[in-house]
Length: 365
Image (tube, rainbow, N blue to C red; front, side):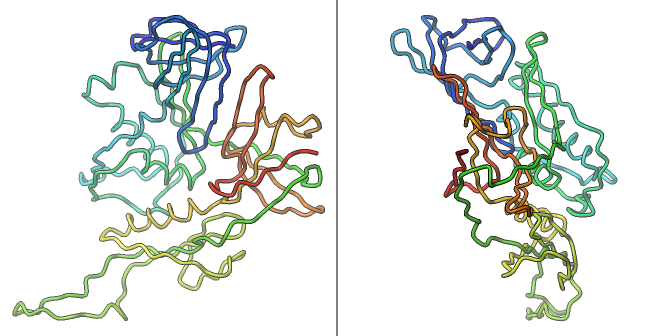
């Protein structure tokens, strides 16, 4: 395997040979990439880093971030292309009928605000955005943003829609056209494994938020006709309020105040979100529960000699049904693929779930 380094103009600088590397692909957070290899060239003008297999076939690409030279040995650090989405934008839906609440409409709006810009630096490299025709009405869950206006971080805003509707943004570098290609994808793959095939220690996550309430912000301080201030209690007022519940199967369900739905989680852990716009309160409420989904954490070592499943062939967010004693224990998605290459060969591990602390390792016996 080797690494190709290109300038910002996509001119070839050098190939790094004799490499080892560590690559972690993540569903929503930025990927990480580091590598070591042999080179005598000055690589400081590098902008694009391309990982190739021994036959020159494309494996992965990202921005060149930094390097450290030690005689002929060089250490490289990459930066995920998705970092381009980390931009502050003004989301303006104050023009009448300007809000398209379909999922494709949301993706197109944010993409245009990030990449259809007059900033010349954003056009140094070509970008292409591939958006599926998904006409799911997001207003049923997240409300309408019509007549709203705010400054937001583009990727943080997108994460709410990505996480709830289970999409990711994949990136690739097209060498033939020197173009960064972003694709909004939804992984429908679903497989099963039996825990008895693994030596494991499995811990469940601690209780986290499982109910959120979105409501209009109420101002109790009022003024009468003469300008005198008085307190007007909220109780008894018919104020727009929406209730969301995270169930035991990791579904986010919108319901009423009674929460009479199946698979309720007990004890109840509730958070309330208020905003002058109901849709913004809904947005925050759904994001809270989206971050509370699939928070268990399991790592499976794909290099185990008797491993019954080859996870190398499965992409991020493949759903894994975990069975124990013939019963479905729980379902978790692949949240990370951890790929390492050294003199001993290729090692692949997959992480199931999104819990970020107290990692539980499952190693095939």
